Image 1: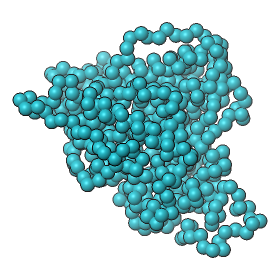
Image 2: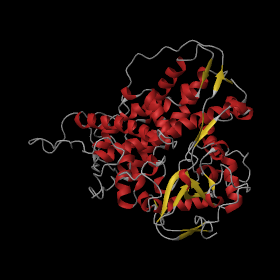
Image 3: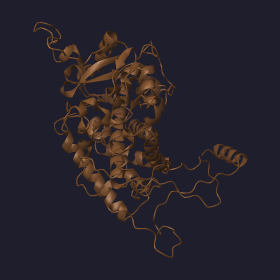
Image 4: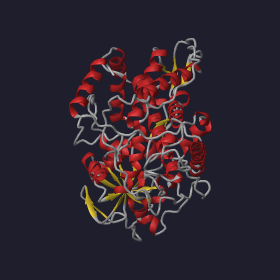
Length: 519
């Protein structure tokens, strides 16, 4: 098939043809949106695989053509070869010829922004380096304490009633509570922010407005952290040596917030559904033959939180999976179909314990950098819930569970459960601690990588304001150090700690000593 997207006059099937249904569009191509895609995505992937192989032409909202990559190895090639498949959405031919309008339902996903997701090469390294360096400063043990405390707070809200909806009352709220605390904006956590984060990736009529609300919240956060630095993720991004502009900081916070929230909320709901509906799964978990982290990993194979990632754009004419890809074509990373590719998983019932070859967090240079935080939220949250309510049972028949899907994800609408009412757990009155790693004494060893060089400190598009961001003026830059301070930052200002590299034998001995002591 050389020209799957050329819809010539007369190519539309006659009225009696079965292709005239909600699942197919011009040229008989299958739609990646609508009832069929939302209600039975696995069935749609099977049809596309049978009809086209490992790479299939599909239609996005508004019948805009794109390619869905179904094969596991083809997805790896797609994500690992930015020289052929770029993340810069401005290459999209449909944008250049006006086929896709700025108010397209998927605009919050594909509209170019000055962030690492839409960058390749040196710019991507500079921006992603700021993100990964800031994530390394998070105290993972402190985060787990927060997750456990937030989980118990949520359970307290319904534990005395004997029934609950684990999606609306637990899975949708826990990730947002944790991410707001990590970012340094716990006061911004509310129902509106939760629903806006859910809505902005669905391709709905309100997605653009929901996106604007999220951006406004994060803009206020950056304004505060420019004036009042604190030991939180937002400050670390603001003050990172990569010298990101205010627009870049806001957009990276938005990216991390939505990616972490959507994926983790779906992951928690999917793990809990498997526990409640699969007797073998629950028996292995309750009998000690499977840990909660192993249950999470199995779910990442079977029900990945993101079904697809949009997108990649062909740099030039090329071939992938036997299909002729034209320069400017859009491609989607097919996470869910890649995880069920018969070439790597011929038996879908097989136990995938210990196997992390799934693509739940994508792959290549754009692989999700915060996947360990998402795993921690799911691990600790599910464990805390099951500890508090060990007799959880599904409150409806499994066939009554409903799903909502889009090109990126598929999540449960509700997960009704019932259980024996139990008393609330006493809340810890101590204030929540910060999430930064504690500072080590000056003479302590560090086991770390050399400091990453920071190329491209500025570029012509760095200050470009995305169309969806409120206001076009950049926020004020922090003031330079005052004279007489020796170039040192003001007291209380967070800085990136210098990397110290002791000799290799000392580093090795320190690592062994820490392992022996259990930390």
